Length: 238
Image 1 (cartoon, rainbow, N blue to C red):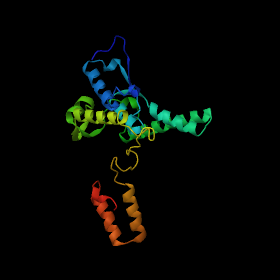
Image 2 (image 1 turned 45 degrees about the vertical axis):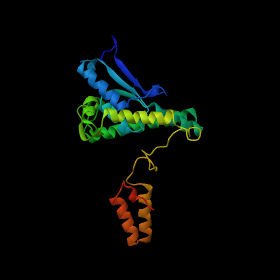
Image 3 (image 1 turned 120 degrees about the vertical axis):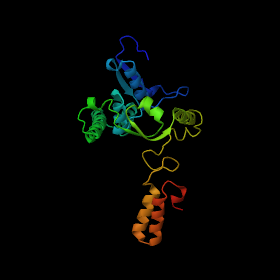
Image 4 (image 1 turned 60 degrees about the vertical axis):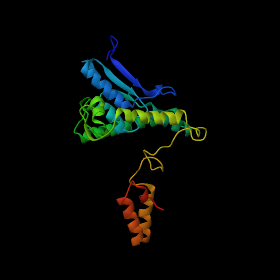
């Protein structure tokens, strides 16, 4: 790795996403560059700043800080907050207060995460790599998240490349429904059929309410089977 003479700040910006240009996940980019800087004995001379849409909650910010970021600008989080404020036709002062609330919530969430590890300052948390990695290949963890333990190895760099390629193609080349649904809703934050599985899905909660209301053994057995076989197709309510 070579840094231009006098370089003190490295800015990683994922707003460069285009139909012709894919992106490396920000946590991987930060972690790998951080390790290369250490290897080249340049880490003490440089700062890494992440301008990213991937930070939507305190945990995502904590990951970037834990692997070397000195500052984070969650541009999509602020842009989403601003759009919601404009839809409500809030005044300029109310918009500023709302954006400050987003910043405060993110900051308090980070402080809570650090406090669980007995850490009181961001400088002590930075580069600490206090995470357990689940679902990534050990070689990838060594390259990007050195210092963390790969509890359950999984995806390799090639696997991640295929996923990135698939998602990029889906949204830029095959999105025939874009005029109707510009963005895919997804299922990471809420239960949505066809996406990520959630233990406490709408079907499970509905069946629990049904049993509580009827108090029938058959309804209880249905609920029990859904919990025992969660994640399988048979756990859904017919």
